[in-house]
Length: 82
Image (cartoon, rainbow, N blue to C red; front, side):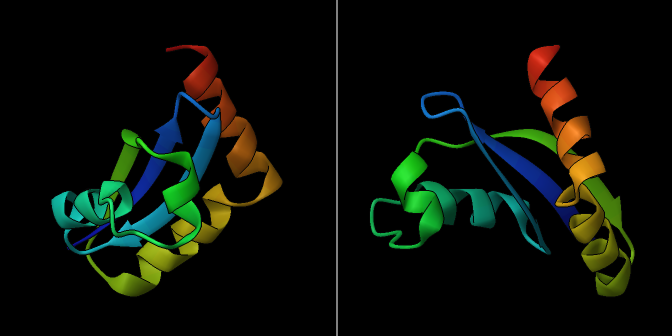
């Protein structure tokens, strides 16, 4: 099982889209003090959206869709309505 997820940093008004097979561990890694990747700059992150898929290929396809212009519109609508 794979989860496509959208993270949101309320402090910086930033979003991050990814996929994983272990969502709790992935969120922990994004927020961990030793994180030195792009997401480290915009901590703390919270999960605002998830979808589950049976295989990795489907998850990758959906992740790419959410990173497109239409996907970003969808994500912005989630943020603006919460």
